[in-house]
Length: 263
Image (cartoon, rainbow, N blue to C red; front, top):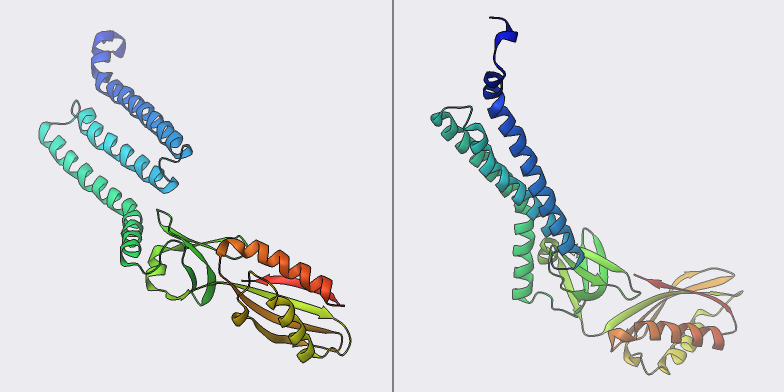
């Protein structure tokens, strides 16, 4: 039979199932894009986090696909084939969901353990060892996958709760502030310098006088570098303390001085 003799209605009937699939796929894409836009707006408003947004997008896409695909192919395959297709889709989608949610569930679980166990609490001043490196700062227990450690000079260190749970943590009663102070001058007397700087620092009302530590770090013919560690009662006074130390040392010592905060 010549293809020209086939009625147009017959051609439409043959291609109708495939046209239905195309239309349905377009509808799925539109629904997903709308959901994606809504989730994006919720994240901008702070209702959900970036990680939650990504997880919900995956779940929505998988759910729509799992419901729609068997219905789409029902016009092409036999009933028993649709059953097996549905089972295969269900197993595949379940595996994808579990894989995508694993890290999120693990992070949430570790966050709840850290919160409930009291390992660290909001506002604690701690020193924590992570991957061979020590970090010092104030704890912020942010909901999600990472704890925030606010250091003394304003930077934030994000530490996964899983690592917090397994880390060595030293809790400090006061906030510590460490400086590297370099004084330029020839044949400086280190002992005299340490005594002068200690007396200057002790006049401060912010610094705990009993917890001033000054140690030589590097000594040369034309300069001396000292490692200074202080303790202050109020974490919010860190910036004020730093400004006071810089002002007092530069104004009362007759040397050119470089001062650097140390992590």
